[in-house]
Image (tube, rainbow, N blue to C red; front, side, top):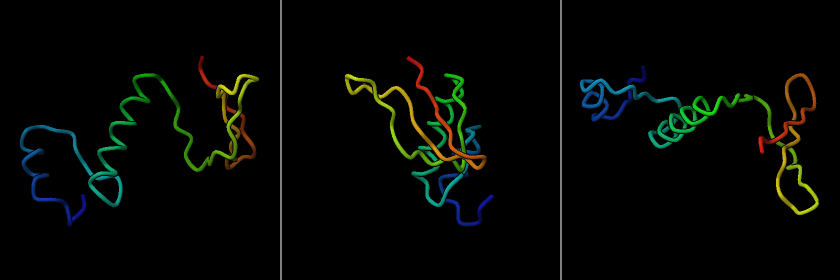
Amino acid sequence: MQDDRLPHYEWLEVRGNDYHFVGPTQGYSRLWNALRAAARLREIEVAYETPARRLIQDDDGAVTGVLADSPSGPLRIEARL
């Protein structure tokens, strides 16, 4: 646990909230916790250290996937439609 946590963290902790810092600021933590929960709910795998390089689009311009660089090489990820 970080030593520089905000004073209201204890207020949340006492009430049984699963709230913790995962990044450098409070906002980052809230965003990550919300995204992580949404990804788990939809069974979406998070690919760390895999920057997106280009969106894949169909003939109408709709995004259908992404080209990314993974630690093991180039990766093509198709969107769920």
